[in-house]
Amino acid sequence: MIAPALYSLTRAARNTVVQIQKAVRRHLTASVEDGKYVLVPRDGASKSPPVKTTMKFPSVWLRDNCYCEKCFHQSSKSRRIDWDYFDTEVLALDVQFDTVTEQVVIKWSDQHTSTYDLKWLSEREFSDERRQKYLNSFYRPKPKHWAGQQLKEIMETFQYQDVMRSDDALRRWLETLAVRGVAIIEDAPLEQTVVRQLADRVGFIRRTTYGEEFIVQAKPGAKNYAYLSDPLPLHTDLPYYEYKPSVNILHCLVQSQSEGGSNLLVDGFHIADRLQAEHPADYRILTETLVDWNDIGSEDGRSFHNIWRAPVICLDSDGNYTRINHSIPQRDSHFSVPLSTVLPWYRAYAKFVRLARCDAFAFKTKPGDVLTFNNIRLLHGRTGYDDSEQNVRYIVGAYLDWDIIYSKLRVLKSAQPGSGGGCDAAE
Ligand code: OGA
Ligand code: ZN
Ligand code: ZN
Image (cartoon, rainbow, N blue to C red; front, side):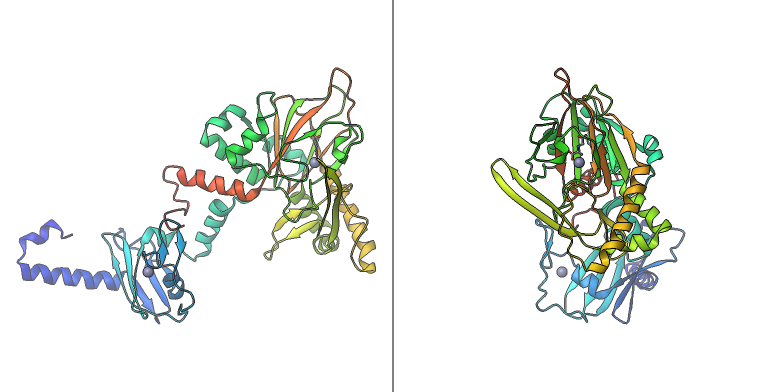
């Protein structure tokens, strides 16, 4: 596009001005460093006041992420560049920045030419700030840990009908689960199907040995410790699975009118924080020692014998918590560790259990409440209760998995107007 003022010039003069403009743009805007890096102005050259900072991209990464038809399959949103012959030493020979379209055009040493939108590039910048923003807002919201006495302040409640009808309410519920690890959905109908409807709203139920939906009720000859009316000590569900179900949905249809039946909740990440600060040696033991978690039984005529070995506090390579495992009933008598590990581990575990017990916050759900919480992070329990003939406590449960929840959260965020969350066509 030529600025209107240029039309008053002769054609030759106009061409000269355009050439100079192009040269200046090239000079001021994108550039190449040794062919190995491409520098692009952070907010584009067209912005005023003039931009001083630049974004730096490795050539190899840019070439790998060319999103032309040949390198990227548009409808499946998948890379299709031929990596059998991909040249990791590829050089950027020339880079042009078009201030009108806000696109960067790069000519490569392998004869290919790629075009990148400035917006697309800035969403993928390698700066610490940009990466943290992407990781904490779009990849996975950053958890905020809490102590038991804060539970009342941080506990958010949502209306069942809002969550079912409004995408905004659904997004806020899932975001709260990701950040705080717990939320209550109130005023659900007293129907068996509620947990399935909530799960379907997010994605689908995670099935376990105990089925898709399960009933938590005191039963004679209980096949699971939770199906007694005894106190249920703090625990995470299903630690004996490698792929442990992520979020519990517990819908209260009938609550006990006896003293008990209250839920207990503790933020396991907060207990791990405290252990690390107050008993660092015990913390290390609980992050390193593999414990055998197990569950043996049969359900619907199918026998099972589940075992998974994992520490109480699981960490990723950055030292972030990935999962807490804790269940006294579901810990195997096999403890496949060297003899010298056993005593120190017991002492460390007892510290963890006691810190958690002192931190536990008790509250009683009422019929129509759906308690939802992160089973990878929170410990939960229940005080003992007494059923009577007229009053039989009745909870319907189901699980969801984080893969499905995070995916739904990203879809909902991307659909928000002006989301700019980093989820665009080539994501
Ligand atoms: C469980 C459980 C809680 C409750 O079934 O694992 O923790 O409120 N139940 O009964
Ligand atoms: Zn390409
Ligand atoms: Zn449980």
